[in-house]
Length: 216
Length: 85
Image (cartoon, rainbow over all chains, first blue to last red):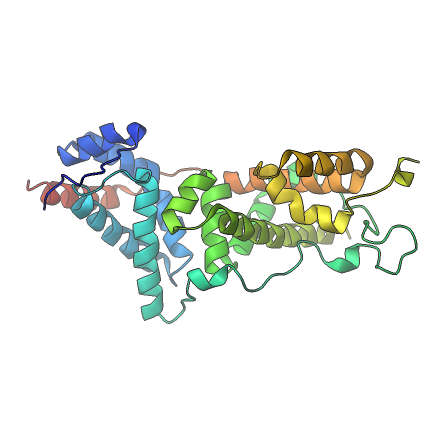
């Protein structure tokens, strides 16, 4: 297959890695594996039922990456391209396992408020309608970073609908930029933000419940 | 009695704008409105801190762990094969 597409736009930062992979540089490949493999498995695990299935998906994804690297045109960042591949393979696998929900359909539905409306004064309130009925309680950092709370956060993320979970995981857990996430899932900036907002709001409610539950 | 100021943005609306604010996706006017609300609303300041703390805590879950040696070896074989080695 010819590598001479007319509008080849390599992402400057990635090109040394891409070139090294094409040239068969094992050290470069292992570096990439070290950077991405764990995150890929965590990501795939959100779609499929078991750790083993997630590992399988990620190995297939690496095979697809190596097969496609000669044709990779750098229109998106390398890792966005790689995670797009993981997402596709994981979804296919999840459909086989019959636990999949279509990704694209998940942006518009299930709109729910970030905070339960009962936490605000009702519209009938003469003066302060829509203001906090009671201020939220500050979260002590020590408690938020306690293993028990982190485990709760991980669970809450795993229970998110797939599109929300995918966006939140790459943004907040793996620390990606919004642009990279948009590229990986072909999302518009607005849809990415809507998904992130809903996902963070849900996880926040779980943390709030947990932190408050601990005090009483 | 700072609460007696005219309140353009109410908290129930402000919490829906927190992500746009953190993403820097607001117009300058929206940003100003949001920040003016924060000045008068301790509850929303706490809320915003909670969300920031949540993001920081989520990042802790992402600490990279190198894959098991067995996996690395398999992937390296795959790499060699793909490069015709």
